[in-house]
Image 1 (spheres, one colour):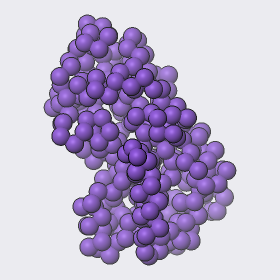
Image 2 (tube, one colour):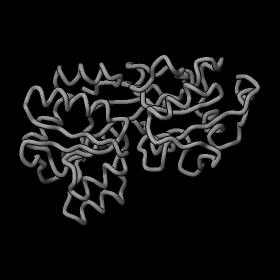
Image 3 (cartoon, helix red, strand yellow):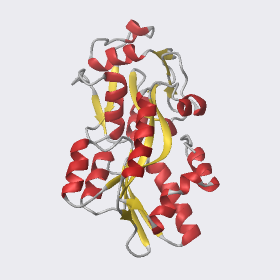
Image 4 (tube, one colour):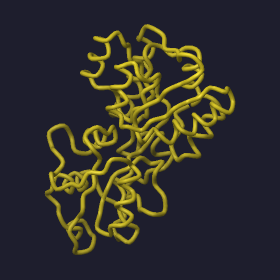
Length: 273
């Protein structure tokens, strides 16, 4: 069982085992967290407001801050592009918060370059060698004779954590020469305007301004992400304090509805259900 399937299975299992309920206070929902989940959350919020009249506030401060908001009870739902860490779960429980994983969509981390770069694909080892600083010139991986500009996410990013887990491994750090950007959009913009750059973003952020590379010979698309064949695939989460009920449950259950599934597809991500 690969990591992708383990995470999805674990999410379902933890959801069944967790006790408690989560429901919104009053006629309002507050979401905070991942910039990757952000487009889904904001599109859901607009639809939910229109269909139920409930106001939904969505902040995109990163997965780590989403976890902190849930722990501090300052949000109803934490958007996260990675599972909560053991220390986050422990901190939550110490404050009487019972985090429950809800998988809302699937994603593939796209490794992107400038459209003018002649490289069309890399292996995970080549990507790892680039980000560890062992490969420093595009000519070493079939590209032009030009220094590679590495773009990464900030330490609070779930996409950064997932990239480290799925590509770098636990022991190999990303080179200190890597430039840090604060969001998927910022990474995409930097790569789009830098002919020698490489970066990684959520699948839903890929557009014509950048070129997504095949990884280990596999293109990132709906079929390969859903099956887990694309090697940098992952689930996306919305965490609640206890089992969701009431308005929170209505919102969390949107991915199981035709309307929610249409929204997920329209913003470029992959339906789990």
